[in-house]
Image (cartoon, rainbow, N blue to C red; front, side, top):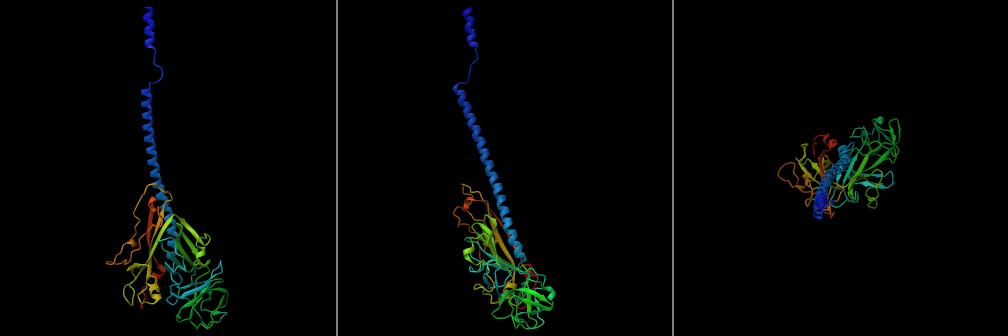
Length: 381
């Protein structure tokens, strides 16, 4: 009996530890759980990158568009007189004291000569914007006497202040029309003392007041950022300064493309309809302009600017996310319905060999040139 009881006690003793099979099953279950968790984490991170990357691109694009759109909306203020538009303008920059000659006074110039605005990144456009900040009438203030080199006697001297920037022009538009920007050094009675002076301008010649801080700004995409250059402070045409961030100031990073077109009223031959009929990049008065119109008429018929900003998120993805560049309205030729788009200006990101590994946002808008529109439809143009 004693031997039997001892044998029973041995058989009832509980097992200690796990068997090899149990350990292997547990490890397999654990590995599967880790794989599932890792995949969920990867998916969550991918979704996060997609969301935050798209948001970052949207924010960058909006910031870039805001400054550019604001300047284009104000463009032409104080510069819309027929006598003034299309004339060249010479002045000396404030910060680097460089003589500059702008070939044409125009509200907006798309892709000006590279000597004026050096080209930006490959397959992107540049934009030059001009406007004044004076409350004086855009038709100018007439001289009440012939001018002298030391004084301009004007009809409403109260419209001028010390250090205002002015342009004096003969009553009859000269040909060629070459004007200069001057500073009001003193106002005494009805006489302005200009910094340079232009003697012999006849009575009723206009003196245009651009205010103390006229704006001449150039925009370009440089090294994947929208940059702006103050043309009243620096000679933006100096190609050696394009990498100087104090001259070409970054506005927003990860901006990969800027495309822009004029919206022009091409209807009629002697009178404008006041509506946009064509979008293209033909600058009035340039070699590509075959309209035969005077340059001031071509500028008066430029009623809008259509543009697109392409922003990129900063996160590189090891997978190819796209093989097709973003699109916009201006990359499709349309010659059948108004407004027409006779030439395509597609978005091309191929200068960056890894462009397909990023996510993009396109922001497109059409900006009315309100200071041109307020002129109304001009006869004779």
